[in-house]
Length: 338
Ligand code: PEP
Ligand code: MN
Image (cartoon, rainbow, N blue to C red; front, side, top):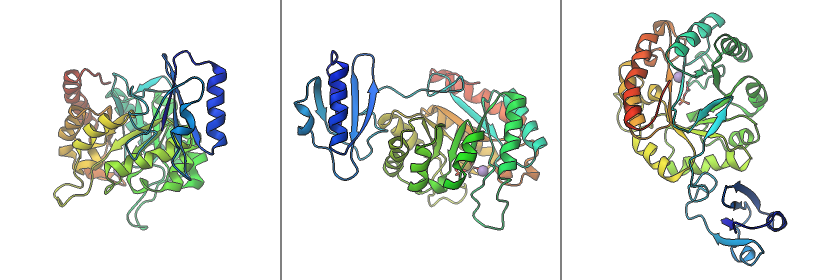
């Protein structure tokens, strides 16, 4: 439900509305706009009733949110959300560009790749220290040591760090090092983890599950926002279809649809979406043409030796070519990159 306050509502009137919301057992998600304050009201036990708020002083209109997802919806917040992540804006005119290996393998590896992706125009360094692997017998990530190596790469290059958290018990540790906490596809509907990162004070890169509908994904994103963390960047990373020639199928429809339905930024991961290095550039171009707010791309200086996902990693030269090609699409879309 959305309560729109009158433009001249006083602070006392606003506080009285907040108090009433709390008294009834609901939760407020205010948006303090230039013209007026709008309050998203959500309740977990029962749906908030309009009539309980309509007569209150200072209240202009009360309407229900028609979609099943609430806090992420454009009905609640019309303007696109733009986040400032340590001086780098995400969701604005400039496209977010994150790049780096699938996994952190050593200090030398991550520092070398960080230098390369920075030279290519990236502002964010990706790299997993905790890896969600299909088999327990595959490399699981370096854990805390991997986070330390990421921190060294940040100190050397100034890049912001994007790294994944797999489990609630590691959130505090990962948040200590990360500039952006990644929630991977396999945890898209791990609601307990989503609630927990909702309490973290770090932006979240939140990937779509491989079989999650857009509707389910956006509802699940509400768990993060409801926890108080509004800095969520969605990431379309390909979905499972009948097609087996590619690892996944990039759902550009979803990118366009999410831009229509949500105020959150959405970026595209053309590496996991295709699973093949030679398809990454066209998928990256398509993602930006569909309206995405950025890209996260796997890059490795020695893909043939990578400990995970080498087949879909770009070498630095190809990464630079990717950025150059995407730049032309970005210009057509009124955006900038790198
Ligand atoms: C990754 O980013 O390396 C990763 C595991 O991605 P996803 O969760 O999209 O499979
Ligand atoms: Mn990977």
